[in-house]
Length: 252
Image: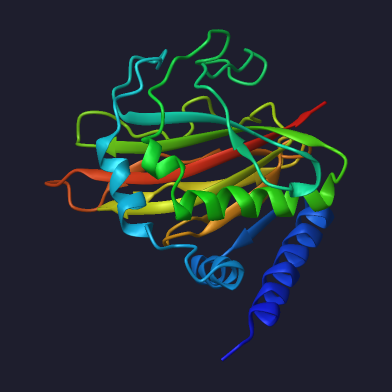
């Protein structure tokens, strides 16, 4: 059985590996199995509420700010902050989400007031583990920066009547510094393939987040990204794709 210190060393070496990959190519992909192992190296209780965490995606309200009139996206939002060098984070009072039209020409330009995360989910073990992972990785790349952090729960649904668009704004940047995207669940869904693009919007790599806790990290200042629509595998049953997105923006 590994000692706590050796487990911690395995976590830190994994964080360093992710930071190096992100630094060298501006994005990184980590399998769900590797993410689970890494989080459990940090704390044996890291994923104690994983199933309730996943179940919370089934209790989200519709996104009422879709300028395309779509009713295929459900969403919750939270705002947090973190000091420099990944030394923890805190939950901030709930506030609206805002993106300028330069970054989101479909839904940007307005303050969007989404329902908050359920408190027990936001403050639970799994969310803490993923938020801390982002702080630790990105803190190594920008050790003198504090962070404005926003977390987003997304569910894209398809029932045969609408196209399910994970990124209805198309190829885009989020207007932040770094982004962590984690797959939470897929049901009866195909598609949802992600592509990373360079600053000339030329494709660099295509991939799909398919398994639980598959994670993609991107440097939002250096690459664009987009996700293809999802479709039903069985046309007689609804399809869904659940993703957690956490953004980290430089904060003075």
